[in-house]
Length: 169
Image (cartoon, rainbow, N blue to C red; front, top):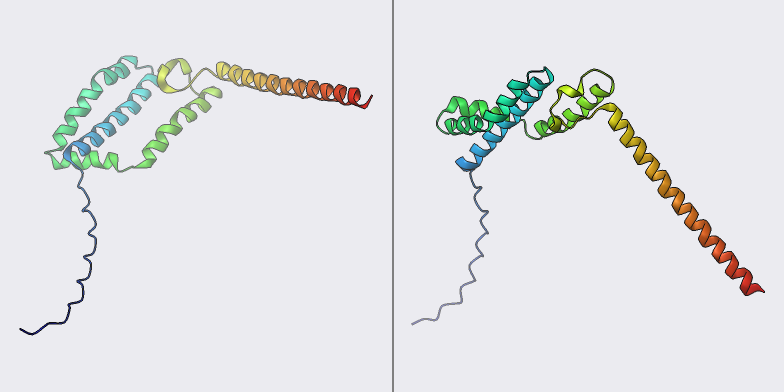
């Protein structure tokens, strides 16, 4: 039997990238449900600003169950799914708008454009006088801290001067 030359080692198999995991129905459903609830929260805020408190309360009371059921319907209804997916495709901009809204409303309240008493307590908007007093109090506290630090430095300087004079004598 002839002796065969050693075979070169087989090239290492390329590492396969893990296949992207397709979003599960549950995660898509949760995303859709959250989007519906976000829209409902915006509508509820607008209703409260218009003085339609019963409507705002209705959305708060029944909106989450409605959102859940509509997201379930989207699992089997492509038209509903497409519509809800459109809501979720706004991506980070929906978050930016949600974060900006309380600030915009606060500016409007600060300049007398909206009545804060018509907003729900969790809207993140306070009476301008309260906000003004809060800022003034923070400024007074900051000034008091700086003044205390100055006094402490002055005391340390005076102590050091006394020590140096005693040692010089």
